[in-house]
Length: 126
Image (cartoon, rainbow, N blue to C red; front, side, top):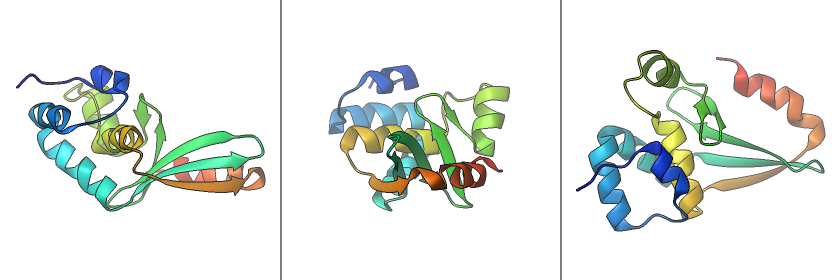
């Protein structure tokens, strides 16, 4: 089974069993945690109105994590193992967001723009 990279996942339009098998080879425990996160309905898409700004949040074990789609998560694992040590190409939060989006398995919240700044401050604080 051929392994997949984050860049390859980003290009996908949908996820099927064959792709999940490839992802198991690439991500192992991280994939398992990502799938459990999706199953637990902990991937959230916030749409602010009327601006239509979109913010992705993944609820982890300790707190909510802010996702910049396809490139960043504000969790410690992303900072330490993806950015600093370059041991992995993603954390399970970002992987969960990508997979949930491709499978249309996330919660959508429509929120008024006047809450944007306070929520972003909350989500960005570590």
